[in-house]
Length: 178
Image (cartoon, rainbow, N blue to C red):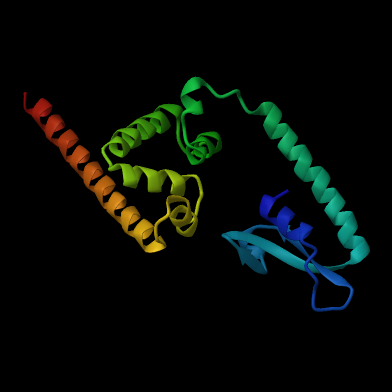
């Protein structure tokens, strides 16, 4: 069961017809009559009794799928434990491998260590999922200040990334010329 469909169906969204509810069924994009966050769905109107039966089937299917994933996913190694949540998701989805993810994390840590304390503090809170408003309240500053520090940190990180790429190119060029 598609996670997005599962959560939409759990909301029990009323349909236009009285006593009916919307049911989202995931499908191929060409068959979809609704698209949400890049996913295609066929949306149908069902009675309350049909909705209850479908939700029970969804719950069983959804929980069985997650049980299977939990029991078949390999135990993470020490390098994986150090990765950010997004990097771990990419690793498990097959979008990247552990050595690439670890190298990216190490590069990010090196660049991050060169930022000012205020930049580190703001970025750390934002990386945890806090909003700029929440970060401002936690640090006792304005949201505008948080936005400015975020932009400054992004500029500094982009600059450091560009410089490290240029240095790699120069080193590679020198090695090739020897």
